[in-house]
Amino acid sequence: MKVLVVGAGPTGLTAAVELARLGLSPRIIDRRDSASTLSRAVGITSRSLELLSKSGVSEKLIAEGIAVQAACIYLDTRLALEFPLHSDRTYFPTILGLPQDRTESLMAQVLSGMGVEVEYQKELTFLTESEGGVVAQFDTGEEERFDLVIGADGIHSTVREAAGINYPGFDLEEEWSIADVDTDGWPPKRKFTLVKMASGVVAVAVPLGEGRHRLVASCEDAIGAFPMTLDIKRVRRQGTFKISVRQAETYSKGRIHLAGDAAHCHSPVGGRGMNLGIADAAELAARVVAGRLTGYSELRHRVDKKVIDVTEHGRKIVTGQSLKARFEFRALIAAANSLPAVRRKLGQFAVEL
Ligand SMILES: Cc1cc2nc3c(=O)[nH]c(=O)nc-3n(C[C@H](O)[C@H](O)[C@H](O)COP(=O)(O)OP(=O)(O)OC[C@H]3O[C@@H](n4cnc5c(N)ncnc54)[C@H](O)[C@@H]3O)c2cc1C
Image 1 (cartoon, protein in one colour):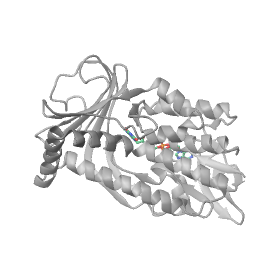
Image 2 (cartoon, helix red, strand yellow):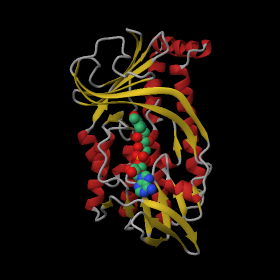
Image 3 (cartoon, rainbow, N blue to C red):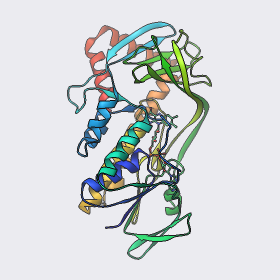
Image 4 (cartoon, rainbow, N blue to C red):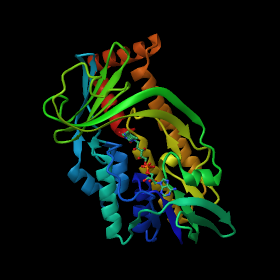
């Protein structure tokens, strides 16, 4: 079977690795000149590690990543809650911190070991379904027929456009900021830290490796947003971004199937974007090989929708300034502080989501 995977982000790479592991030889293309150097997603969930363990990718990720041990919540400068990020019901007991460019690089290494190389500088420009196949057109002017196409080409997916699949949802107006920094001292090394300010701004620090952190804030300055002094040795990258919450109306149309950001996007609260893409891709690859594509769209649409709804609810509680949002946030902290079982459940929920 001739399969084309469009996009060599974490979703496309997972699809290609799983297809190759299960005996197919997919083509995987990306319009970039070479592998990405952007650190984007920094938290790998246990579910992703479990899915990637069969190909040997997880071993490499775990060897290089940092196990995040606990979460701390500050109200301005006061530590209001700390709980362990731990589940003993999962493949990996916590969340693994690793920059996305390293995750992609380790996936590409495993793929290469299976005899499949990413074809960079190759852009899909259009797709046409014809009897018995899909004809892909590339920026080089070439055309080629495939039995099946996987659109893992991100939020502005050409595959989704060409298939005429709608991507309904909304875009948030406010600008968020991000910074990757080398640190020494505060923020804590193996802890996820969330600071909620009385002003309504929320700032988050996630460990990326020994002495390296990702900072994110719901305002334009991820470093200045923190009310405490950060021990920053070097700023590696800084920028702003906007949040969209969207989901494709269907993930499958004929021989064309969507996965990852091409199928859905949401806020970074909960850090699930990349992980949902990995799960979509693993499910899709297994179904391609088993010839069971019916039901892929329904299943993944339902599962992803649940996670999008939970993360949206989380974003509103964490960043919300309404009385209800503030009450829910403080009630959660009070309950967790007085009941060890609630602290344990919170940690389990974060690891298992
Ligand atoms: C600043 C930032 C921080 C983030 N933080 C987190 C986080 O902490 N946790 C988390 O889980 N997620 C996070 N995300 C989201 C996460 O990065 C994405 O969900 C993830 O990259 C999606 O992977 P993907 O493979 O589906 O798409 P992408 O990573 O976007 O990959 C798509 C690939 O397709 C290629 N492509 C596009 N069009 C074409 C074409 N026509 N032809 C050929 N190739 C094409 C692109 O070059 C790209 O390489 C963050 C995102 C951003 C921007």
